[in-house]
Image 1: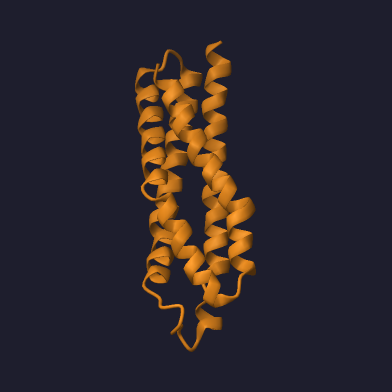
Image 2: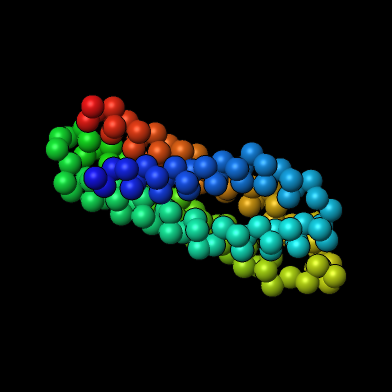
Length: 150
């Protein structure tokens, strides 16, 4: 009964991150700087607290499955999924969230004079791709548990 919760939460998180990686990040990189700051602020507020809740639920569900797993392969897949979701959360908290907070504090009409050297878009996009790959791989581990259990 816990596996569907893991798959739902993990699927929502992976889907949102894929949307961000495939559409949001490329759009943000292409925007003029003054528009970028406003659009980034708008988008980020739409993903909180949705993404943290989904990731935490998926991690806890997979950790629970790992403890209660009926076999070694399911246990290994659940542990893998939980570790991957922990990786997504770690990258988010240490890389993307600090950039989000910095941008949230910016005034688009008064950007730093050295913007070209501090522009975080490439770094944010790269770390977003890392967490997207981790989340999708965790979801694959979850789907694989279904295959093993059938």
